[in-house]
Image (tube, rainbow, N blue to C red; front, side, top):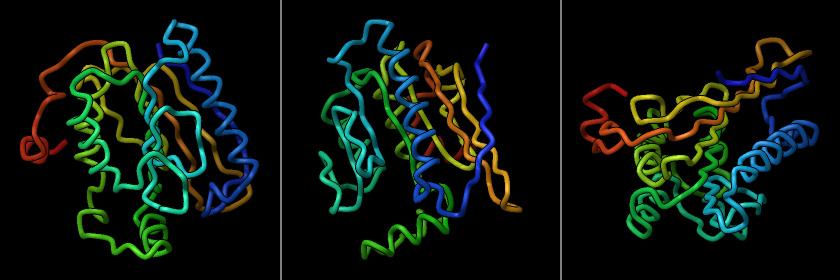
Length: 204
């Protein structure tokens, strides 16, 4: 059964500009990665952080903003599809997926670095990235996803929810909570290998 931890804290509309939110997030993520590492993945584990910003714990890091000195500065869908083409199926131990939490935050982020948001980025932004992630992660590997709401990879792709953290807001009316979920890939599943077209037809 999945574990769920709830922390009450103050969350503003710019959660990752808040140092206390970042400390909670970083501590929880470190604990999760330590627990995963205790399973024997070790320092050689292939970890990808797709929206890394200044985080540097992963072996491969990406952030669209070129001011961050990440391995790649690519759009997330393109990055994970490129990495899948490079490394192939079941080649990655952990993917950390921490995108902008809303279309408003995404637009502000993209505009801030002078990148126009394509229409798909305001409707269903990360479909291609999640398809590539499901292919990349090994059986026994992990997908760590953060957001105001999380559309996890799910059992149809062979993943099982094993851990979660909710930062529930206090003090500011009508402000979203932040949710972090950890999924483990338990088995291969044909649903993990659908094309973008099939994914859209299925309404996933």
